[in-house]
Length: 157
Image 1 (spheres, rainbow, N blue to C red):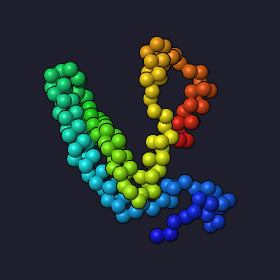
Image 2: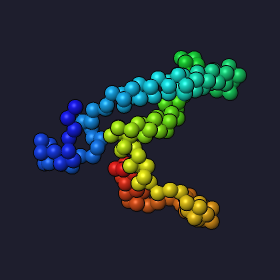
Image 3: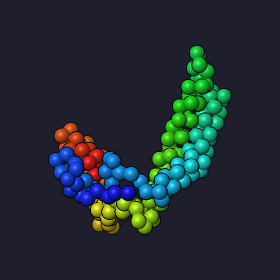
Image 4: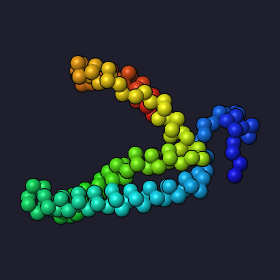
């Protein structure tokens, strides 16, 4: 499998590409971890959370705490609970999957995740103390341009 150098002459504009770009082809071991994560997240998180949320929603409807639709009955609310239970289960397993990829030795994807983790500053006791001394900082709204700038900053990381 040919690996592209960071400045590949075949790329338009000789653009610099990170180790994992949009055209990245995962290794066989990474594919195995993807399949494993997909199956485990479904069986251990998505299916149980979805089933429990659907059963609980149906229970609330049967007890009168939630109103069933006149036209569709309880189906829309139960389906909504199932979909969000499924998504919540998948999302709750993401950290576990990231750790599995980080543990792969010869994986460009694992290396990219390890580098990303090294770039994030650790939460220090001083930062926690400052938050507890000035909690209003977290609750004060930011002006729109600053908020937009921060959002863009997080999206590009």
